Image (cartoon, rainbow, N blue to C red; front, side, top):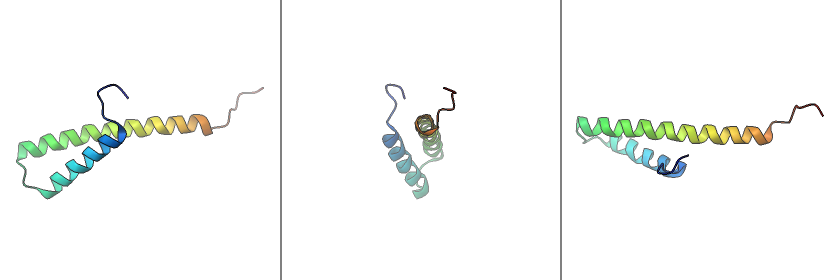
Amino acid sequence: MSDGEPTYEAARDELVQIVAKLEAGGTTLEESLNLWQRGEDLAALCERYLEGARSKLEAVTTPDTTPE
């Protein structure tokens, strides 16, 4: 992705931590909303990483149908 964005693994790990915090409770409404928004952003980033990986795999595994 771009500079400054976490790697897929870092984004996934942070997302797991956010889910655990939200499930544990004990945060204010404002904190919960901020965590939820960060989680949404991280989930979208992970989805972009996975879509990119899927596209790369399809590019190398799809047979070339161009006539010779």
